[in-house]
Image (cartoon, rainbow, N blue to C red; front, side, top):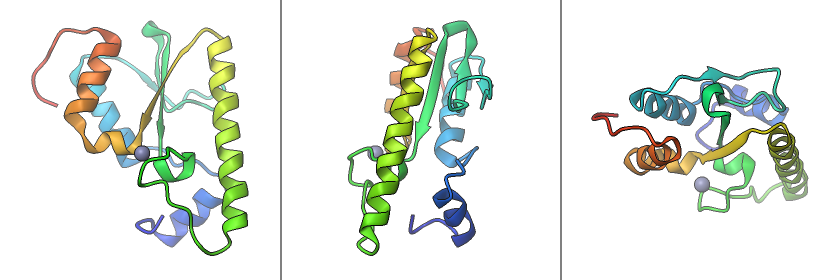
Length: 140
Ligand SMILES: [Zn+2]
C-alpha cells in the first residue's frame, strides 16, 4: 500500500477493485506473446474476472499480494488499526473463495496469478505457456 497514491488507496479500501494494474498488464502481455485471445473483466461472470479465455474455458485472476493475502513477503499487515485490516483481509479472502467456487461450478478453470509472480516474467511466461500448451514463441 505504501507505493499507492492516497486517492487510489481509499478507492481500494472502499472495495473498488483496481483494473488494468501493472501486474495485470504484464499478464496480458505474456498471453499476447503466447498468441492467446482473451476478454477483460467480464461482468457476466462471478466477480467479473480480470482475464477470460473463452476458448480455453479459463479465467485468470491477477491478485495483489497485499489485498488478497498471498502469504509472501509482500503480504504485510499495517501495525495501526490492525483489527480493521484483519477484518478487511478476511472479507477479501472470503470473497475470493466464493468467486472461485462459483466459477468452478460453472465449469471454468480458475488460474490465480499473484502480483509477485509478475516480477519474474520469464517464469510466469513458462507457467502460462504450460497451462495452455502453446508452441514456444520468442520475446515477451
Ligand atoms: Zn505474493
